[in-house]
Image (cartoon, rainbow, N blue to C red; front, side, top):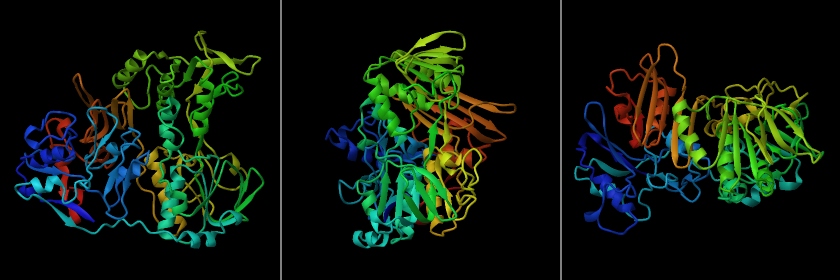
Length: 580
């Protein structure tokens, strides 16, 4: 593949490369002589940083061999092209979650500064043809394009006819690989299996009838996207990977002694290797008759969102129990449908797990301005079904009664392990797995929410990849277990939080705030243990690398918020960025 190679010792910080990039991507058709460098619509995909010693460090997208941005993308907007090796961005599919911004270890990516809904990402100037505009503009020849080896390989699967013959397709009830669940863990496992085994038959079984990103369900609730718009896979994924997909069915039992899965319709499916990746279910607390009522829903899967949308057609007052990300997602979507929304939260602030009080207040103010009422420091204590089987009011622990036509409960999830009873598969909070994602029974693996480990998207996807590799005998280990990370984006206010948010004894707390942004860092023993950035998260992905690898920052900068990847900058083999 072709990559921009940086010789940073030659860079004098002229920023011609940035201006050329801005000119190449501007939409008004002007010339570089009238280019407004201060216009936020003219954004450069590259940057010139300065380290703590005043040295210039050019930062360009590496189009990495194993790109973290692609692996963390929850909408399918970022793809690594198998032919060129470059990573391309499709803004029409972007969910504006900015997980890619948080997961780029070099801090290359950023949200656009106008709509706050797109990602600014190098496209290698493919539409213009020839070499990237930044390269041609550099007077010092500090950057050039070079052909390098890309260690990433997209193995071509078997031809359609060959794979169908091997698997027997829909008529064969035994498969080499059986995967329960069509979420990101299961999908990523399929990709890894097909890279290593072209002919082995793969049978995926799921209650879901449509592949969807649960992180974008609020966009379905709001009407911004339809079911197809939630699909994070390629249009031909199942055909290309030759997967037999049985949809709309749950597993009723796993029988390790005969290597079979019994489905709820009585069908038996045999396997050589089995992956349990059917996720978790919404938890409805045993408060009054919440579990009995017909108008009470969790928000976990597309079927939940579809039911909520149908119920919302005849509902005016919506009660949301829980103000975490799921609860606010539901409220955000229903605001677009003009509903009157009340949110009950037992903590003294919203988003209590993700944010401190100040960071949370920014979102509370915006939701309240949009018409949402918050009841904080309270919890539901009673809910009674009326003769119509519905709940029309919920009583709080202080006696206050809240009228409602629809109730959405966002009180957490529980791994969906009920069907494993009697199987011998060890479970604790979820399925117990080793570092290779194998369960207590040989040839049975698990990944994602069902394990009880972190089920946030990047982690679940990585667990699926590791499981898929090991189902093919690779012997890979799941090592990147860091899960204290989130991005939030409501009303155009973006937030990135990594690590812990609560300060403790011996901590050094740094805070910086102005009318556009809020920054807060927790440092202990010279290492950053938590970062919260709100209002501007551009080029902030390096913070996660700093925190999860416990890198010492003592003596690097006077002001912690001046730290950037430039302070750890190193260019290695094939032009890859590395950490010094």
